[in-house]
Length: 140
Figure (cartoon, rainbow, N blue to C red):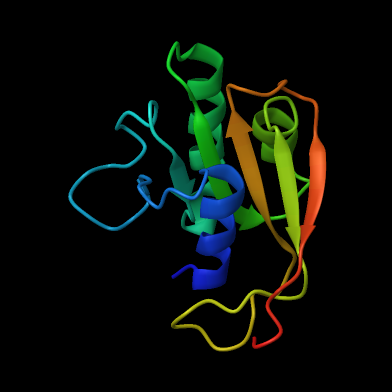
């Protein structure tokens, strides 16, 4: 599960304070890769083993949708991979690097590599990357 402080940052920074967002990666009866993600904010902390499929879907939506797109992912910072070069770099608006290892609820210790937020938006310029840095709260 996503730490609350990350969700709070996403809501404040990318969703104008509105916690009314869609998370298609939540376990359920619907295949989140098949539903419509447009017209409302979307936050996705996908299963990391299938992150390529989720990032590919976001790039397809941004490329083809006539509706507003505002999608934020929490994923490993993997600039050395083919999927990053194909589905992130050409389309992403912002990458927010997260300080230190992120500890997820239900798991011991932190994730063993760097984690980031990847923001796709139809309001920005595709491929023009802005980098930000998010420090974990001191109580962590």
